[in-house]
Image (cartoon, helix red, strand yellow):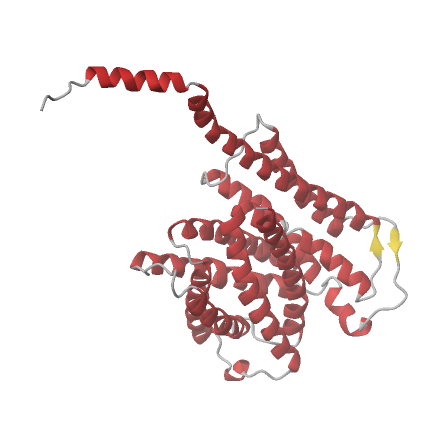
Length: 364
């Protein structure tokens, strides 16, 4: 049990490293002039080349039969989780910056929590410590990640050396020439789709217990939808050509790591820990982006980063503790009837003997 919990939390932490790197690579691709309609097509084709064979061979024996209802669910997952989510993200990132996009994604845990509570997938007991811990944990994680972005404070650490500083500083600077307001609206739509996608995956996994197959079909239907949109709206044939190595590297990273590996890990963590726990780790990527900017790109690390990191870690601990206490309470409630029956075995034997007296015996 402890090993399973450790795997779950390690997978959720690793996911945030994948997401943090994706902000940088996609920004590089957009700066190189890649089409926002063509990029997600190539990205998800790359992901499907990884997910397809992996799902086929690993779940070949345990895969449930695929019905029309399953295909409709997969289509909707592709629409919300790939077509809309990635489309809003590219439009938002093109008008803002990776740091701003990472900060906006901090609303995903709160939105997922609200959706899960409204749909009664997640229970909240405000009169119990575990329920209050889950609510406070979500608020602390979102607040901590927001502080990292919105409040700097005095400088705590100034690196002397930076790797590839001049090459990447422009990627992390705030974008002033873009439409930040529209970018924020696009990114909020991206966060709504992401939250809805996480909750939808949790419901689909209840009826179809093959997470890799679900991810592969989601990616497939997303590709079909994206190709259809690109065929109608992308008028320049040259947009389908990849002219720079930055575009190729960004597609490979976003496809294999983010849309492939990370998507498979995300749906696995949702099946093991639920939608709220899978989303509560997202604010950690804001801290990772801040650390990457400081150590690798040569940016200063401010007091706001320390305060935000403390709140994020505290929030994660509160949610994890609340979930564990909730699980313990549920197990104790299930054990009560068993213990009560073991405490009064004489009542059970008396009832059995009484029934034997009431049932007439048949003379042979």
